[in-house]
Length: 185
Image 1: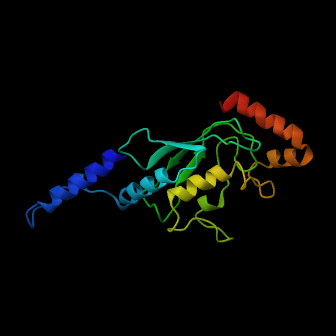
Image 2: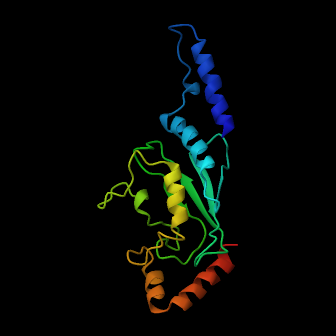
Image 3: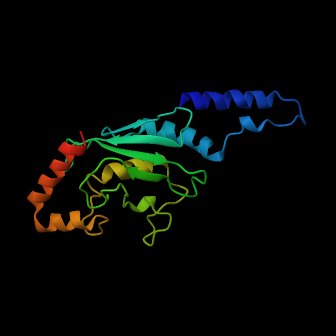
């Protein structure tokens, strides 16, 4: 992260020293998305929940990172759940693309990794969907909350998991623990 920020500062200095009218070098251009991400990643790292850890496979690509969530309470306590977050070029007009990489038995996360979280929706009837004022911090805190207060059995993506919880809460808990044991360690 610091590598990209340092590169931006260095490039701005080079551009400032360029003679007026000199042709610009497009290899030094930085997208609006990347400029936003430098600020947002710094804010995210300063305000990360203690149950979350962010890693960047390539520190020069702030638009792609992984998030590990290790809930410390509730059904999912003891598990470690991996997410990949890919920020598209049109960010912040569109939300990041998020996928859960860990198999999980959860009413709001499909076993294939799709996630039902209103702030990740580009268009939302209830007005809680994505807006350009939202940030990566909102996304991470929202994902973290899926394991506690945003756990929603009334509007599920994984209907089988929600119905399982309605039928037998203890068996649901047992299946969640089996998934944690087999996939989320």
